[in-house]
Length: 218
Image (cartoon, rainbow, N blue to C red; front, side, top):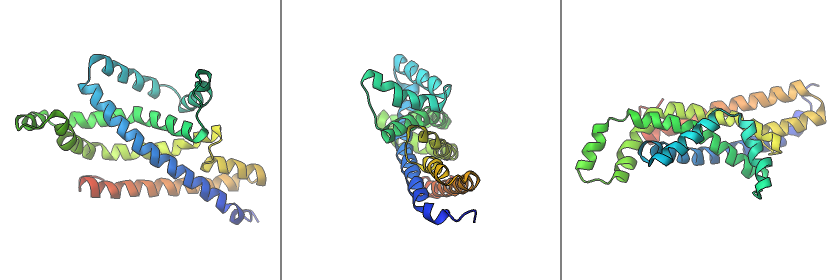
């Protein structure tokens, strides 16, 4: 039977899926945090910081994610910096995601009327308080759909980290295919798992966003 191997492989597929979920969970938190800092620094920081952030964004957005991953995992050891595969994957995914979401968050910050900042400052709030309590929540509501899409895209791109032997979903699929020689069935099952993960992640993010940011999120 074509799928007779599936019950015995279910554990490996599940472990790979869990690793994929953990990777994107950590990457989402770290990448979003960095993107907020980067977007704020690009608009309000000193000239050198603005240029550094702009250069970082251009480099990361205009080079392949696979090359970035290989540079971190294979290249940095030449400088004495050695990372295990999982940590290297998290660093690469976080830096890549942050580069894209800096632009997204920046667009949200630009969408908040400047008069609100001026009014809050006139009331005696400090610039940091204005940013955290007034500007950022409104910006996140505006850009949340785009941010959600970027997170899902990053989850799908995490398949690349199988190239440095991170035991995520694609890595487990490759191992199963090598053992069973059932390429079509193996990758069909894994494709369906990725599809289910993408749909579930998007639904989770949309539902969570509505509760955290209000009814304007969709």
